Amino acid sequence: MALRISKAIRRGKLHGQYRTLSNHWNGGRSIPWLNVRGLWLEEAGFNVGDPIDIIVSKEKLIIKKAWDGK
Image (cartoon, rainbow, N blue to C red; front, side, top):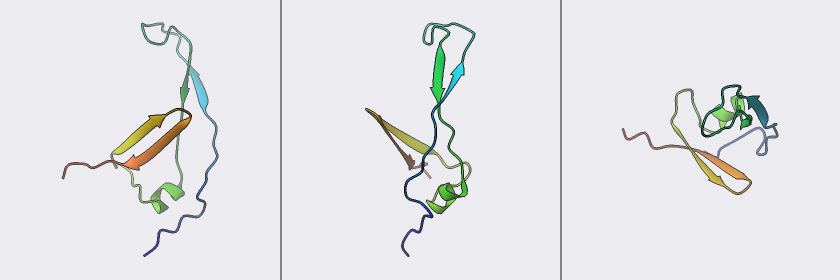
């Protein structure tokens, strides 16, 4: 059966979260964070508790289900 996703491209916004506690890696600056949620994730085969891999490259993130070793 073919995968049916309501929208193949989703748009969101990258948020910032300010950390008042300064440490060696953030220097007390605003740190970008991303929150992804929606029924479309389930439509794409992701379920609550699934392990994921995030592949990071210049200006691109790829999120895929991780092999859980079972």
